Structure formats: structure tokens, C-alpha cells
Length: 141
Image (cartoon, rainbow, N blue to C red; front, side):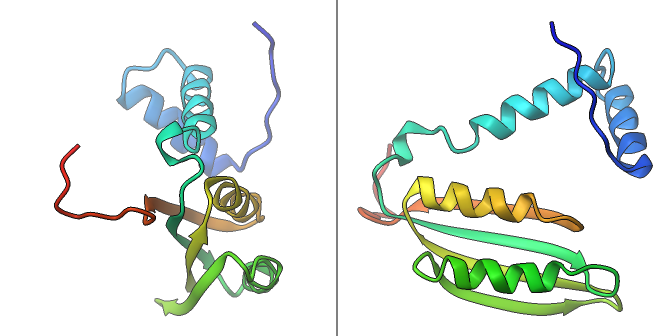
């Protein structure tokens, strides 16, 4: 198995170690491997391929110490064909929440979420994706 060096803030490393201890992992490498598998598999759901999807992406950041808001504005404009709506809200004294409503295909939504996740100083990035091309809330699978 290859050894990989990863840089991360001390606070995140402490949380990672605490998570490993609390959940019975043998160490941080095991947690990072599982998280990597989960991240890579997020958009590999074949049931979503070649379908029209709606995605909701929520980003939380500290507006006083970062340029995340400016990056979000640039991404919104770069992907105007994908971003159906965008909402900005203040949260507490120092934080902002950016919400994106996306309409498109899996590959485009995945690329957009990846760019947001790669944005330095974004504190959290959450998303959900649902198919809307044949939406039937009463259908059972």
C-alpha cells in the first residue's frame, strides 16, 4: 500500500483522530481511506446517469477572514446554465451561507460540487441530488 502525505489544519486532524477513537477505527489512515472511497463514490450512482437532476448545494463560510463569497459569485457566473437559483444569508455574527439550486446532469453537478469543495476556507459543503425527469412522488421502487 502506498504512503501518502496530506496537509490539514491541526483542528481537523484532532477531529479526525477523535472520530477514529470514538468509532473504533485502527487509526486515521483507515478513516481517510473510508472517507476517500465515500467521496469518490458519491456521484457514481448509475441510476442518476443520463437523467435530468435537481441539486441543492449549501456552503457555510466565515465572511470576515476569507474570499469564499467572491469565489461563489465567480462559480455562479461560470455555471449560469446549471445554477437555477442562488441564495445568500447571514448566519450569526461572522458566517454566511450560500445556497445553490442546480438543474442539470450528474456530470455537471458533480463538477460544480467539486469546485465548491476545492474552495479554500469553505467550512462545510452539503448537497443532495434528486432526479426530476420522471418525478412521481407516489411511485414505489
